[in-house]
Image (cartoon, rainbow, N blue to C red; front, side, top):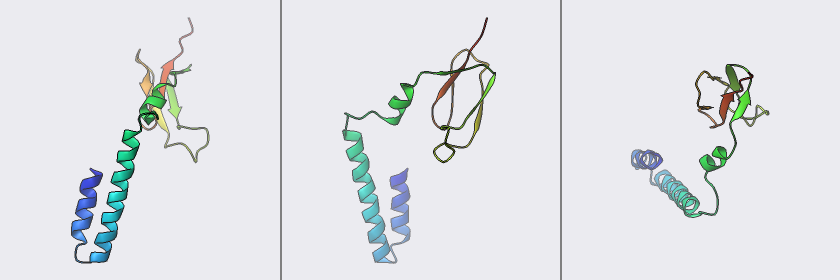
Length: 103
């Protein structure tokens, strides 16, 4: 998707060669960076890292996920309903929550 966006930007700005050239350079640098990151198998992907975090147990039926205790590092608040048996997943950060049933 990003590569098609860059292609469209480059094609639309072909009337001004210097800006098209700079967009092409940016696209090339991003492509090289992504390829380099994908080849490095020693590092875990963000999804692998978040899946290592065990589900967070909460007492209520609804949890408000902000991604981090520091608002500058988090994401918009997502209210998650925990009525199901399987852990509920935050759509922004991937943290999982389960309801802690006290019997």
